[in-house]
Length: 140
Image (cartoon, rainbow, N blue to C red; front, side, top):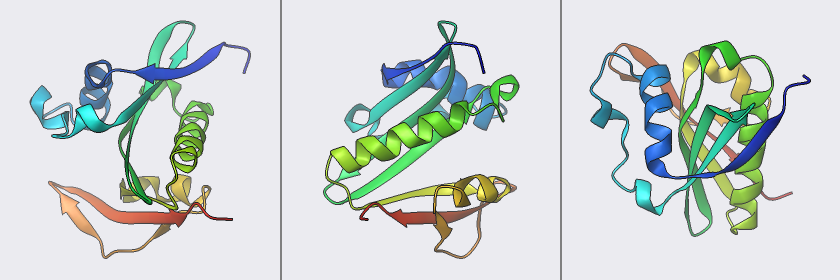
């Protein structure tokens, strides 16, 4: 990919438009806000200076969780999400976390398995969308 991709910290508010348009376009904007967003570490992937993917990382002691991971549809399957998730994994490790988890849509299970994440829960639903909790160790 010859396009310039820049990963950098962003504000929670900067994540909201992509969270909304990619993950829950049929819900009100407030649906994509997380009550502890102000405690998270939010990262954006900028392609040619345009925000095209976001992820929010929450670290609580040794436990870390990422939420609201979203990439613009025209930017998916181009390696941008991989860069962003690897960045979040490195940041969680840097902050002392030993585990990383997320509630993942099952249609993304293959993507998460490439990061050594495995389903560790039964399937559950948010509306009509099937999810499972995926987790991995950050200790080598």
